[in-house]
Image (cartoon, rainbow, N blue to C red; front, side, top):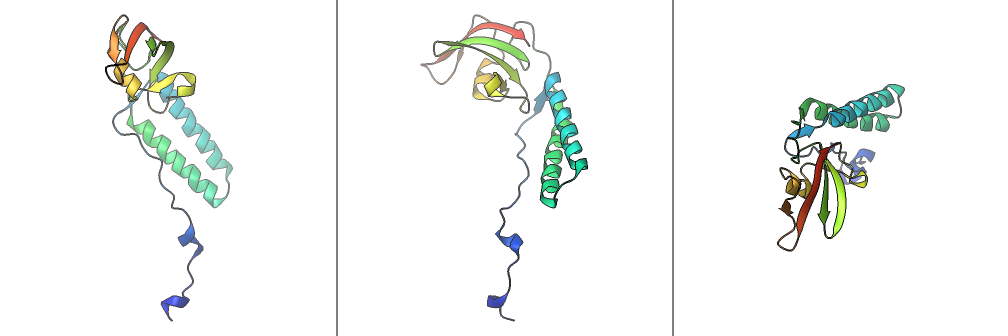
Amino acid sequence: MSVAFRRESDEEHLEPKFELPIPPGPNYVTPAGLAHIEARIAHFEALHEAGGTEDQLKALKRDLRYWRQRQSSAVPAPPPAPGKVGIGSRVTFILRDKQQTMTITGHDEADPANNKIGFSSPLARALLGMTAGLFADFGGEEEAIEIIEVGTK
């Protein structure tokens, strides 16, 4: 039979399914971050047990693989030194004449809409290790961050 008359399977035209990307570097977590990971695993396990279509179950298994990998690679972040910005710190600062308060978290716990930023974000990297009253460089010579207050959640 000629290749020209071969029927292509429907699978050949579907978008490929990729694994969820794992952020590079260490997987530092706060106690709340570890609880978040465990809650996500429980959530996806419950959905998987409830069943669904073959495609739904494949997606759930993919999500479970991601969260189980995040759980197995989780490294509890050391508590920040008193008054010093670290993972788990709540920092009040002034940037571009605007006062903001952010909490520095692990990757999976980050939620910028709720003022939680991951420790590897550019802003968090500029803040890590700083103390109140100092200025951190951010975005070049024109911009600096003034640290107002450092605490814990």
